[in-house]
Image (cartoon, rainbow over all chains, first blue to last red; front, side, top):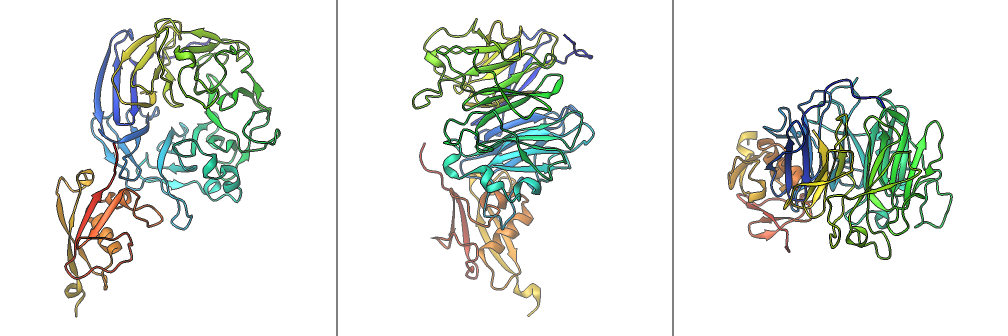
Length: 375
Length: 99
């Protein structure tokens, strides 16, 4: 398996929560962790990301119960923050308003300063100045099919329909993927000027049409590590993998235990091995309790591109643990032996230094965790 | 009457969630040149003095956000086009009920 070319940095996690932003910094061995924060106490922080191109710019998407959505920006690794001068907002005559910015993605390495943001309701925005000002991507937001793709209010997730999983092909800045809950996955090969649905083979059990072109509910879509021709998807209705140039997703949920099911929110891929990915299933039966199946949380890992999945729960509670993990709240570092991390709906941060084999609680008593990212 | 003579000043009470924009000030004064002066003009003037504050209260469609309440001389006013009486006192409130 190919190894990273440079020595991995010390891991720092950005922890976005319902009540603010925290950081959790590990030592070189990833055994000892130091919690710091909060920033923006009382703000609902949906996502926070480091710009890997400069290693110091951070963006955080925030709002409060009272106040509208904004983007906070730091150019010194989080020491000081300043608000975006023009946060993502729909055109005044569009009839739509941004409730919150849900997803942040740094742009292509050849385009320093470019960032993408996905919002609720579904909108795609782009910044060309490192997050200071944002404009709608008209090719999506004003597309004649946009309303049909996104569906109505009844098609959204409980706290609003979302555009997420904005992926930029590392080989081509103009090649983009987005996903929507609801709406499905879409692809652009011209920098966002036009979009086509990319959902063949993905189930949508909540729709009567078995050959639906769009209207699916991807929860999280990621590039495979080291192979941007491979995509992994955790969907409302299962697990899927797509190997381009094919356009039909393959069902990779069959290897999951029936007692656990294949429903969940996060999908994490190995940075160096395109066949490895991690998921964290939740109870999606009956009325969708959205808790650990049976109160027994576990990560599942595939080493063979989804053919089989292995339960990994050493160190986690064995019973009566009723939390779960949201779609941005699980991530991996790029150490030779990859560290995997997740934050729970009950404010705990869990980490594994051995690719998921064993787990340790790194922090607790935080607010409901919305996102965990390596910075 | 000169443009300067037509300018009106309005006092605005700023709630705690928005005082990060006003350097902690609970009360600020804005100057509006438009005649008649409307609530939207006062909020626009506030945003000139304290950039970013308006969008946290008023969405891109021009509507006051659901959990923001605005009082003009003690009466609720949610219409940004409403004219402001001379010397009106504007009070901004973060009105989020529940736990």
